[in-house]
Image 1 (spheres, helix red, strand yellow):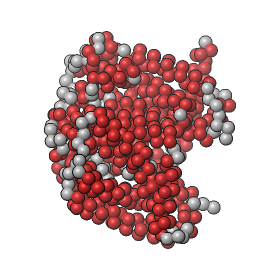
Image 2 (cartoon, helix red, strand yellow):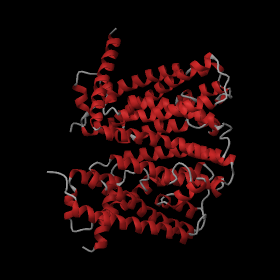
Image 3 (cartoon, chains in turn blue, red):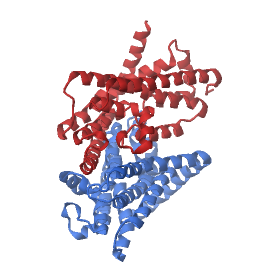
Image 4 (cartoon, chains in turn cyan, purple):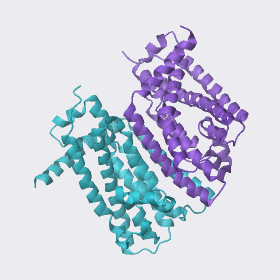
Length: 273
Length: 266
């Protein structure tokens, strides 16, 4: 019961702080829309690159353009949600360095909610919209025998992928307790992860695919469910049921990241400045 | 103190300042290496499908990827060089102090940025490049002359890169806030420099236009010089023309800004 009220408290704090930042960003409406559009364009560049590649070739790693767009849409949308919710976590290192993290500790609200909602940026909706557009295009363009099971798997994949990315963001934030200056390492896993998943698994070396399946469960964000929906061979010949594993992987990932966060938070020593 | 010694000292300061952040540098090396690995695999798949795309063979495509990772921070392709500090100084009004200094504003910041570039290349760029050369089959020239011409192309690329970012920073005199400009520079920088895909792969007239823009002088031209795909003189002429044009535009804008604009702050 205690955990549930704590979760409710956290969500409420998150909502209040995020609401404050939204109101503040909407004060300068023109600037807000400009940054929103900017965000959309910046994130659209990855897809422009893929389109450019397909002006030169018909297939990439054996996958067609709509199929790669499907991978892209799933990955970008899932990442977009995670980035909206937890994208601000990368300021943790800076806050630890300048001592302003201590302020969060004395406030009567869960620290994770406070730091997660810090500088909550509604402009990140740009990324979600852009990913969603590509996904919508891909869904109409891919050649699939749709069954109810496959239709249901699409939203489940996006939700599972979003939570897996959230766990990654949280892990990255926890790492900043150890090495505050090294916040950029987080980007290798989060931004690197979403970039990687925009391309078919057949493009990458086998050991590399093993690494991003078993060590860092990125393959569950889109590769495996997409292979199932498209009727393509699974990466690493994983069993058929793993297409529905993303929610399980997401829960396990969050549990692990949550545990790490608590340990990190408990071991935190202020810089004292 | 002679002007030469003054700006050398300023450049050394820029170098030392960035050398201070060791953990950040290590993190950057790691991130560039990871992105390099991802890009290399996608490029290999692309060149597998269409060999000699853009006039490169597979080994040259690999070189291009790792050179891109090496120059990413060196040339601040995404922004984040000294122009960030300059924008902040203009915004807060501290620029007034810089204008009082008995040194030229543009040269002062150019020297600082060259110092930063040199550090980012040695501290952050070389390791991913060597990693790429060790783990992937990469095309590398064997003669000293090519490496020397490449060094010249790199120096010119640094000046062009600064020229673009200096103009962006000066716009803050009128815009008051550099966020929008920085974002635009980031988009243009990543895409038009050929960070995501070599510019010689861009199709048709669009490709022609992109290859003529100043961003092409940053990664594409040094890469072509290194891989013997372009005659050095042609490359130098292209880079030098943009460097001069950008620095001259910067000087004009700087004069206009210091004459007409009221400095911020109280």
